[in-house]
Amino acid sequence: MSDEKNATLWTTITRLPENVWHSVFRNPLPSSDLGRASTSFTNFFLHIHPVKTHRHSLKATYTFGLGLIAFFLFLVLAVTGVLLMFYYVPSTTQAYDRMLDLRGTVAFGIFLRNMHRWAAHGMVAVVFLHLCRVFLTGAYKPPREFNWVLGMVLLLLTFFSSFTGYLLPWDQLAFWAITVGTSIAGYAPVFGKEVRFLLLGDSTVGQEALLRFYVLHVAVLPTAMTLLVAIHFWRIRKDGGLSRPPEEDDLSIPQLQPVLRPVGADVAAAAAAPALAPVLPKRRYGIQGLVRGPFTKVGNVPDRSVFIWPDLFTAEVLVLVLTIAGVLVVSLFFNAPLEEPVNVMHPPNPAKAPWYFLGLQEMVSYSAFWGGIGIPTLEVLILLLVPYIDRRPVGVGKWFARERLLANSLFMTFVIVNIVLMVIGTFFRGPNWEFVSPW
Amino acid sequence: LLTWFSSFGLFGSFIISAISNFIFIKPRATYGQPNRFSIGKPEDFPSGSRLSLDTRRVCIVREGDRLAAISTTCTHLGCIVAKSETGFACPCHGSRFDQDGNVTGGPAPRHLPWYQISLAPNGELEVDKDIEIEQGTYLRV
Image 1 (spheres, rainbow over the protein chains, first blue to last red):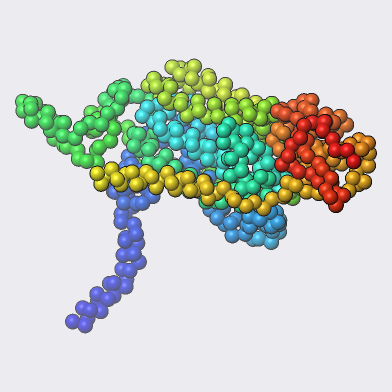
Image 2 (image 1 turned 90 degrees about the horizontal axis):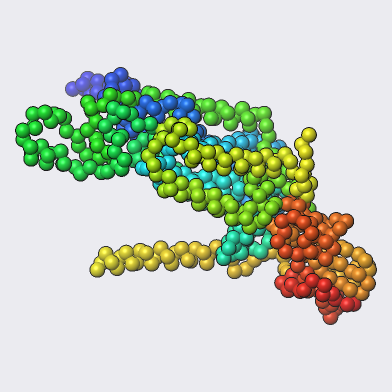
């Protein structure tokens, strides 16, 4: 009796690590397809994915992993941002000193600030490239219209996050950028002046404005972005995975408007026509098959799907490692810029925003209303409406599809004009915003 | 009816909370600089001088016995304009103004405002940036 008890105790102890491990990870490393499927849907992080995905979604030259890179940069920003918050004080008298402390006394301080700054620049660039990818492959077309809209909102939130972020060091760039930025808001019709006052919390730029932009930067905007990113990801699955070109032998593609097929339609049809019963497929699909489009695809089409584990998972880990490596390397070699402490009496000459706002600054130098409010609002509205204007289901899932020559040309013009404006603002503008030659 | 009441209540609370949020973030008191301030005695500004008080963002112009206070906040996007040979120039987006603050180039939509300047009973000059006066209106001392 006592021996038996000891034996039970002994097995409990020896098996403890194993039992703990299996309570956390319910599956052994999979060796069968069933195991691979099970791995995907029993793991919290993997179950965001479907069990299988189309092979086309994994083509690196189709997506270049841009959405994923943007998300990973967002993670890097969240982590480094929280760490920086331990040492930052949103006060006009202390903020700049804290920046110097990051350089001088805080362990890894300068490195963290570099990572945060360069990841932010990278995120702006990558989110924009992601937008270009989605446009140029026609991926915004039905049923993915609303995910495009969400993506546009995320782009704007990215811009606003980066804007509120570079104000926080309270250096010359910060002060004059906030002055110019909120003045642009003041040009908005009807509510312009009120919006400016709410943003600044005062009639001039000062402590209130810094505090407000800090709260927006560390609490409001990241929360909004996290929620929208979650919906953005969720909708990828609900809209049928990543866009891909139609396949001739795929019965689910040719119909133009995907519809929800009523459950039980097959059963009713079978009951009505008993003569057909013998040729009906033997397998039935339950509630988990309730997605857009006909779902009895098994056996009807050649299977071009791959398992998430390990194919997509390894690809994602690779992108994550490359993203972090990129941020680390850039942060090792380049220090984040920090200008002179604020001098409310003398704007730097020329006073330049970061590169991604210089196109806007160039436009603003012609007309504050049209350059800062009118044209940007029109651009955003048109981009938001694109999937509702261009609804022809052609050229989806192909880079620079011939059928989309007009749409792609218009879009490329828009991109090139903006890049040209940015280049002019960056290299060809000198003191008093006068035209200078960089050579 | 219960559904109707609850949805009405939910919708109402949503609207009310949205409005009250806006009221909340609109400050009732601000901590910035006062818009009305004294700048010293008239003798501090010799005739023919154009003195920029950069902390106050105003330029005091004196010609003979005439005094004026011209704003040095660019009407374009709020940078501080610097004095130049021909008047004022903005470093941010290249607006240019003449001696009286009229726009001579660049994106500025209107002239630099002139503020009311008056002689207080204690003999000091007082500028009130809340009161804009017509260009060319001088205070005689």
